[in-house]
Length: 99
Image (cartoon, rainbow, N blue to C red; front, side):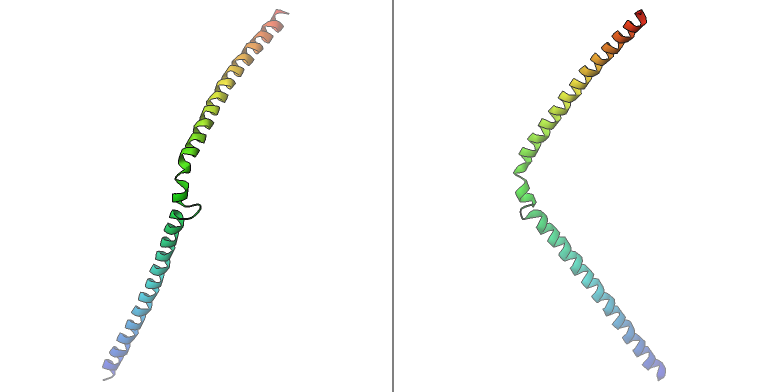
């Protein structure tokens, strides 16, 4: 008779542990689900959300294009200045060699 009672008691403990772990998993799923949902809502809505930022795409792309043009202009000027500097250095070397 004691084995039947022990079996019932161990069965009850296993069920309790199972429900404890099921409860923990449910709580974790709810917490992560709420976090995901809140992140989705915050991304899509508000002053810094995707909906508010979409109209600024053209403005930002225009600024990016202007910056790229400035970079290209600066690189061209740098090339010209380096070429002139090399010419001056060659002229200086030639002048010192002629002395």
